[in-house]
Amino acid sequence: MKLRSKILIIAGSDSSGGAGIQADIKTATCLGTYAMTAVTAVTIQNTTGVKSVVSIPANEIYNQIVYTSKDIKPRAIKIGMLHSDQIINKVLKALNQIKIKKIILDPVMVAKGGSKLISDKAISLMKKKLLKKVTLITPNLPEAEILSGVKINTKEDMIFAANKLIKLGIPNVLIKGGHLKSKKVNDIFVNKNEIKIFSSERLNTRNTHGTGCTLSTAITSFFSCGKPLKKSCELGIKYVNSAILTNPKIGKGHGPVNHLNSIRLNKKYK
Ligand code: PXL
Image 1 (cartoon, rainbow, N blue to C red):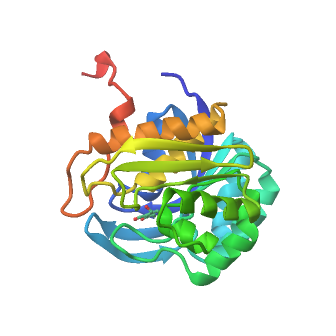
Image 2: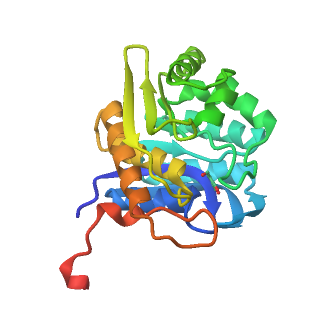
């Protein structure tokens, strides 16, 4: 397979390999995309939970973004864990400098086991400044509630919350419905012209660690190849569903998904 595109991932490291920048690199690679990275934090964790989080100095995050992009220009950017206001400020400065238009933000707030991955100050700065810079945001329900101020219990609430986010300056919103108590999972894509509901079977497993990271990077990969944004969301959801369905059942807690579901090993390596 030939390389299809190049992306830059700004996110935190997950030592267990299932979420964060590890999930992002695996996803991009398995979808034919070259992945560059700017690491924002190092989390020490396994599938049973987060032990600790170590920050990378904000200036070095800025340098990773600017220096890397100066050499190889990414076609799109995915942003994940940004846990402090200082980091958001530096990422904003770097984004202004490198001028890449396609930016997908996964507003990471809490890890699967419940550990908080962002400060309150960072959330308010994200709302005030970062949201205006992105092409698409992909919150889950709790994140959408925090960013929009809307309590979400139904599909209609999801659409209402998405429209509130659009009023904050984001052109496209994909709210993920996995946390809603419904038979099917409804992920809702909204912009000022349309509303599209992607309905998937609910897959009954606790091995969903890293699904948010995987989805946002899959969307970024497809979008960076030139596919339209809504189509990129549809394909991203398809990739994540296959990854959950074929999850390898490893670890004692919330296990990872199967990023390899999209690829077949060439005969010469068998
Ligand atoms: O899934 C959210 C997430 C994002 N980024 C990092 C994480 C996690 C969850 O554990 O560790 C680094």
